[in-house]
Image 1 (cartoon, rainbow, N blue to C red):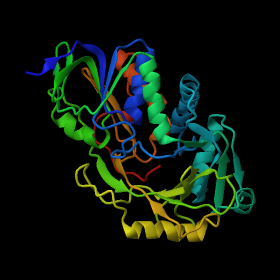
Image 2: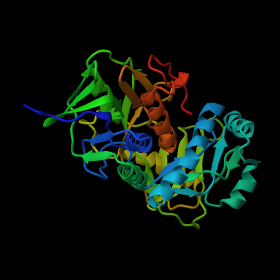
Image 3: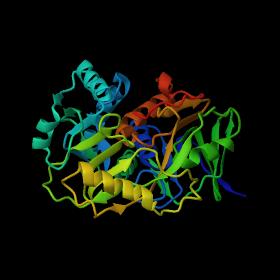
Length: 376
């Protein structure tokens, strides 16, 4: 018979960036928190590993721009709390289809965020490693996050605040009852007054095993994506960048940024559909060839023949909006792949508010069906 542990205020299932950020924000509010992660620290099986993610505030509407703005002081607070540098401000640029770039400039302007609109030739003089397409907007309070260090820092800060952070714990099922939720593992029943499911590509499967009431999740798609790192041949002054298709770029959109591993570029959601068990960890040669061709055309500051590909799981909703909502004692945080990492500490704050009953899910994040739209 499995042992039954004393009831915690909150049990969090999933120790990626979102679950770890939630553990930190909940523990700092005085909650007793148990964080359960199925793999070892620093593992590469999910969506939160690696040396780099983009931090930017430029979006096509004020909702995400404001959310990214709320995350920025929390990233800085995390650094101060742990003494770990996770955020480097290099600035960020969007370029490509003018209508798309102009929407981002308007969102930044509406919220009073410092930015500038540039001609491609001016942008190329400033950042000679990049060729720019048609319309350009730059905002300086942007840059990159170190993914591995960020996850570790969230867990360290959570532990400092009293959270119990455990690795190598597989959650088999959830059972809701009048006193909270029983989280069943092979060796124990971990009881919580609330549970937060932030298990990435494993979330949907786990929630199908949960007792009523069950959340109505939108259909989510998991793919194996394959960004690649290229050796730079120009100096270190690389902004984060997003190249939107529709002007001179007629293929998929591209994101990119500098990192400790080189200049990283990738496509958005173009990899093969997989499950956590069927992913191969092998990059598709055709996808790598597309990135090399892009680098040869648009990135004079890299060696296009130097691609080193990586893979990661990428779980997203049809409309690219996240799921962050509560039903009963269960809070679900899912569908963050593609653009969610930058928001992690602000999402952690929202999760804490949902647990406490002091916040409600924003309309874009609520349970229910979603219509497919172009990615932001």
